[in-house]
Amino acid sequence: MSEPPARSAETAKQKLRRQAAARVAAIPDGIRRDHEQRIRDALWHWLEPGTSLPSGGAILATLPLGAEPDLTPLLERLIERGRRVAVAVIDPGGDRRLRFVEVDEAAALRRTQPGPRGTREPIACRPIDAGQIAVMLVPGLAFTAKGCRLGRGGGFFDMALAAEGRRGTAVGVAFECQIVDSIPLEPHDAFVDWLCTERGMRRTA
Image 1: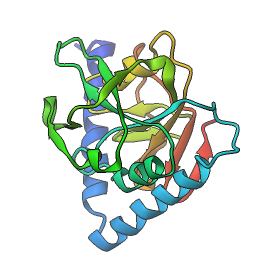
Image 2: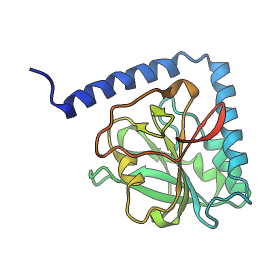
Image 3: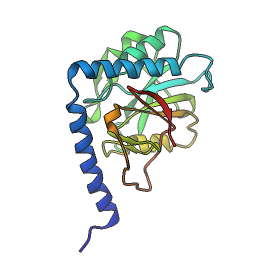
Image 4: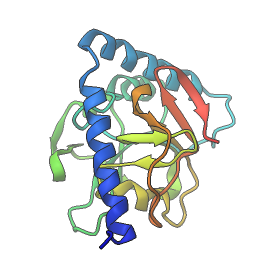
């Protein structure tokens, strides 16, 4: 008897997660640091004032989990230049939702406390709603050129990207080795508008 479609898709996704994690783990430390800097530089230039991005809104990111590219230096630089920066944290209520908190000082990004599922979150930041987010910098284990995203399986960013009232532009952030030809699609899967890797910014097809 064949697997039900939903179970078959999840089995394929788990395999892709393992493969993507292995490719990232194989990047030598020096090359990895260079790739992270290239990613931060590409995002910095793309986020410069005067672009077509929504004005006045916050730039949302996450503090790095595991082998995700570390955007902390970029976020600190943005705050120092007067840009609004927010961090996504997991709501402890258990309904697979993210909360957004705004960070006023660059140093606050280094003052963190443990969050659910091994995450870290800033201490004593004020909450903001999805309507105030202009750009979402979205982590993932894999992405396709069309913007399909493979996360860790919790569904948190899928819900955030599909949330009512969201107006921001979504950017998938990953290393180039995490860009794959295809990802099995399920109804809840969400897409990003742009991709940023060490090769730069590109719109999704």
